Length: 119
Image (cartoon, rainbow, N blue to C red; front, side, top):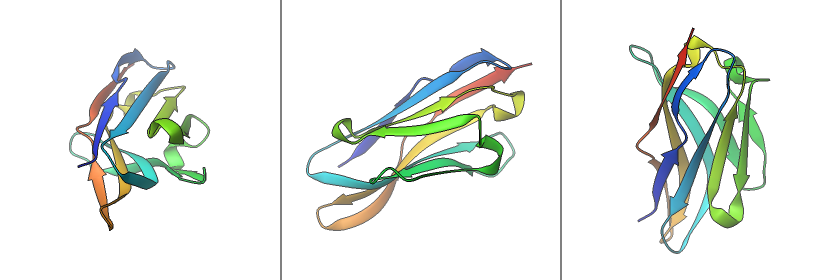
């Protein structure tokens, strides 16, 4: 089965930058959309950004102008460049993907990576 593995989280000061990566592994699959979500303690999960297989992107309102999502189709990897980070960006960031595998489409999530922004 296809799995997603995130990396790149950590602790950064406000105004700093981090780059998250998410790699999909498995066999005989294709990906329609890859997303980043985040969930802060006590808050609902929110969409950060997504990118489609043809490169179209969209962002949550709070991320526009600061975050950039990009993908490498050959590597089945998506990246999230986060600049001008704020303490309110502190959350667990999850990678997700809509995967076509064995004739079925399903959504999968990674294990999450913690991003902490100190003031």
